[in-house]
Length: 498
Ligand SMILES: *Cc1c(COP(=O)(O)O)cnc(C)c1O
Image (cartoon, rainbow, N blue to C red; front, side, top):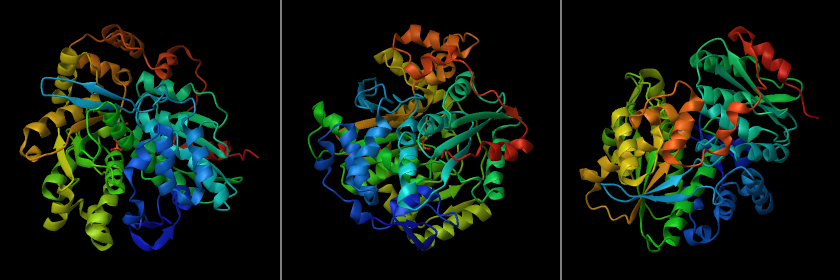
């Protein structure tokens, strides 16, 4: 039996369905499997099937209170007709001047970014968790978005029974593509609303709503879908196994060989899933944490010093622009123990920094390497890989690629015995058409639609279906409101589905 404990309070222990309903533990902690030895398994049992079968195996270990039958059903519902690739996360070989790597494409879902993999799962896990915890309210998800998470959350929650979602985005503050991905979905439980303000205003507004509306409204409870929910993290473990299985199938590695994974990182959720895969018994070599110019994690993984008091850069890989990587707290809990973790998190809140011990750093460095690359290096990677291999990467994947090249040529790589390297690709190049065109040295067309067409002409690759249609779809969600009207707006939208 897997129990989840709060990283900040050992007396909070719950089963997975409750952890998923709660999202964050009371007092601000994150839920983690309390006994890491209990997730240990024989990876051969997991990798023998297709993606769905791997998901069923992984979920049933972490979400054991749902029961095998229900878990199987939830996996099927979550991935039915949502992904354009039959194996959900296909692996593609990409060669370049600096050698081979395998790119794991995580963006064949409805919004063409990797958050789809987890946000297809979480709503169904939440919906089912209600009945298991005598929770009779409907759930209304509130999200503030600077662009990408909002549309992935909408696609995940649309039409899921007992749930609804309201996404607030800054009016005039998102790209045309991002806006249309949010305002065109036509489902009765979905609302997208522009606010007169920037992203910070939207986020502050949503946080305030959670404080001001603590009790259910008309049988509807407010909740969030952010990336610290364990129900978002676990579904991401699956594709580490899927990549390994595909490497075996292609004959690239022999059974038991180690594989390195390079992960474009923001909130540390994706790479944390890789660490859980390692702890389950998958032969993972190194986990290379790739950052953009916001290199707080690179410094931490090299020195043990976490320091968020630094300039914040807006980069061409916006989903990695972050100074506080929330999911790192989970790794600290296992490596540094509950007491140190609590102390470090307090220091981070109060002083903006903390320093772990040398022993702790040594433990972390046994698995993790931190590398960063800036926009220019990322753009060069897009150009070089396209020129040498006709493979087009987006601006997040290209940061990981550039970091992989640095890692391979650096000291940290010395003595590495991994048989292959997998670069996680977190977004379709079409999703960031403008930046991708600029990286290739092409002129922009003046519109997102035009840029997308131009990328299509260059690559010849099909535009993902979720993106191709949005410019001609009718706009369903037209509301634009003041920050001060967010509260009555939400209350009005809360109605139980019955
Ligand atoms: C969210 C996101 C990331 C970062 O993932 P984390 O789990 O937050 O580390 C990287 N790339 C893209 C495209 C994303 O949307």
